[in-house]
Image (cartoon, rainbow, N blue to C red):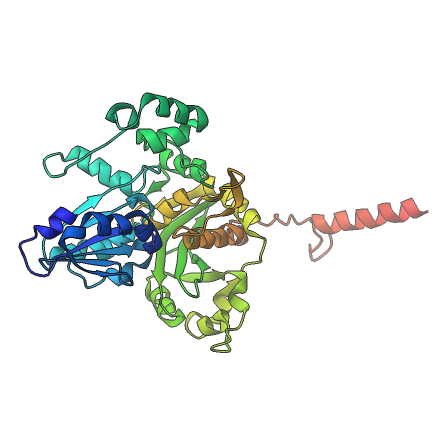
Length: 402
């Protein structure tokens, strides 16, 4: 990136190093940029994490967690580090348009973590070698690490962990993933496919509301014991009225909107709860608050429901990837995974899906009511078999007392 910046021939060259988090970008690369570019630097801005070169070009560090900071920029080139940890929509919605103005280039780097958006880029580069440059560096063939170090790592790590971190394996399981097995089964069984909206069935929604960050909403229908997830919506930084407008303007016939338990809490700023704010736009009769059964019980409810879930692959792509990557927090001191989830971009979609799992049984197909079988008794033929059983029960009970 330093070489590209100092040799850039156009005006206002702007290059970006992007990590999943801005703090991560600073920790990984900031010192290197300042050190290796020292002879050709004209200015360094520590607050903006920007290096300006003597030819006027700049390298700036960003975090994918705050993608809006990159909107409107015109990039001459970008390096996306640990791209598999980015929210899937960041490249298409923000970074790719920012490359168009200057016909900029992009590098996707990282470590495999299952078949996520990083795998999709890798697969594309594999299939189109004339259009993409692909460099894969498994430790066993790259020669970058001595054999003794590889042997020690292999002995000390779980097999999936070693294959993922050292051998660039996309097939290794994502360590600590809550729903890894269930989501792989959904993919293998063809339940991640085209799931159209059925106008004859009502639509239900499961929400997670981020007061300072993301909001996520799943849209689903229930039929014949199947949970059909037809749509997914996630947004960051929008107010509740804008979100309600999006939901209301979708072409669905809603029956119920399931909100998290804290939606009843009143905001100190507005004096109104989320339920009260949504009631004016989404009909208060269609709002329901899901009981707080705890995160672990909710996760277990998701696991039990997932074998009967069908996902629309296109509309729910970002939510599906969030469920695949939803992971436990790793305890460095105990060297073990905690029971609690790691908070990152996957949290809100996964929390919203817990609302679906807790609520779906309320709208699942109910067994038909037992058929009332009349008896030809009395002039009006009004006595039923159920009536006879009740009389029998009372008679039996009276005899027992005698």
